[in-house]
Length: 196
Image 1: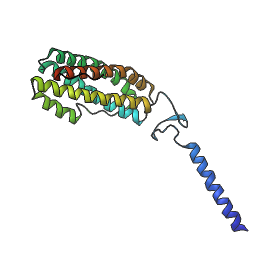
Image 2: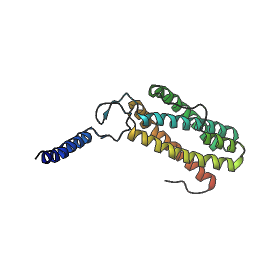
Image 3: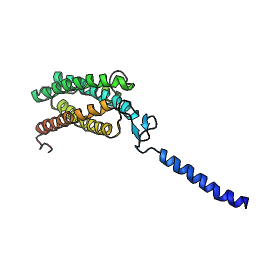
Image 4: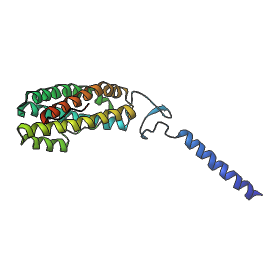
């Protein structure tokens, strides 16, 4: 009789523990370091791992935009490409300054200088001139701005820090416009139709 009670009690205890674990679960799909007042309801003024990674990646990307924009202004022979490079330098300098102010609050580790792949591309681009320079620069701009849009959307979907979410919302139309300008400039340069 005692063994029968034990066999009935153990599944109830295991089931009860499983139900409790399910109620404590990660309803928001957030990384474990996400602080929160209630389960699945993080506080708006704290940063999670997604926020810190976003600051790191967006800062490195923004630095590359400024450096490559300066290079385009000095090396391109096309007034349209030089103007585009000037816009990238100005817009991304402002965005970088804003992100730096916000980023201090999330304690994100951001290395100095450029990402190694961006530094290598800058070195390669310094060897190009004329139309090959313009094409390579614009193709890089298109790819980088598409990645930046994905990064911003990722922060909007999974970020916790309210200031970074607002920054991402503000930057989304600006980055869309940069992408459109780069695509139009490349289409004009190559004589193809610009994407719609």
